[in-house]
Length: 300
Image 1: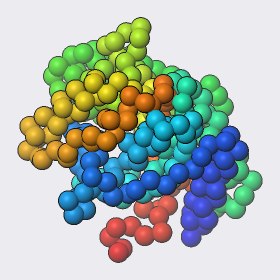
Image 2: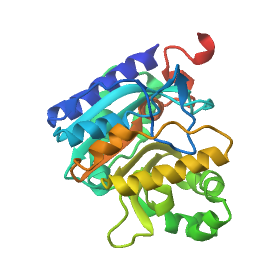
Image 3: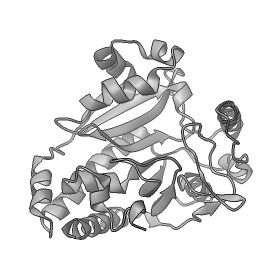
């Protein structure tokens, strides 16, 4: 039960961090008619609609309507995800900033996790959590390594070859992720353009997207990027992803037309999704995601 006290304290600290910086906390609908079509995610149907895989599309529509910075803590749902680090229903933190890019989000992560760890260390946590917090080196700046360099260093293969041979995910999981975030957190950044579905391409190199993932102790914690705000290009990417879903033998969700209609009004911005269950694992010294939940799916 002490992990539940620690989890509650962690979430209070997260809210305090964003509230003190003037972010608007929002609640958007969990049940939606059209999630973003993402080939690697399987949404949970809810009647003719879907339970959200992320609050991303609705939060971006609020950016387009003039909210300059906002955050949300909510439940998200993805089918066929269950393991020691995965849940079909999980808690997500997302935040968005107008006028920012993915580098600004990296700084946000450094400040956020430092603030949360500081509050937990001063509060009520178990001895296991206290030892975990003491071992965490969250001193900024954290390590930054590009995807291209990570593949050269740890996979022994160029990222272009890995993509051509359909080995990217396999090599990332087996060869690269175990090396990330071991001594201190690591930002794996500058993903290939084809793996940045909603991310802006780099103006200096259109072969890469301005996207990163944050790792601590080999555990992927967050995914952030500079936002794509071109509705024509976004529609093209969604169309490609819907074809990939069909090729995998699944029926794609409808095109999110209302999101695309408002995207042209969205200012340059950056946004990030961070898994709060996984953050609780890291902060509280748990080796399984089950340990930081009040109930697992199997207990219901």
